[in-house]
Image (cartoon, rainbow, N blue to C red):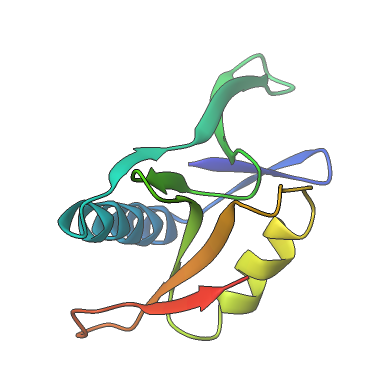
Length: 121
């Protein structure tokens, strides 16, 4: 999997991509169990390398991995593995102007635990 950083394309290790995908799915399933309607919000676009290869690149929209909503609230969420990555999610959310009624949550998963750590931004 590829990601963009400061205009350059860099490769992510496959294990990191698989872990990110796992925690995003785990978070989506967790929200569904709570009664929310949930969708991922990421954009996929193509980057052409110097040798002419086209590489798909995923980018989260507005710093979120997904949106969860019900009849009472809208939550933009970002899934993270462990406690130490929670600050990264907060920095991503701070880049964008959200209206005051929108909630922003960073959902942290500790390996082996069934319930996440929720950090409300």
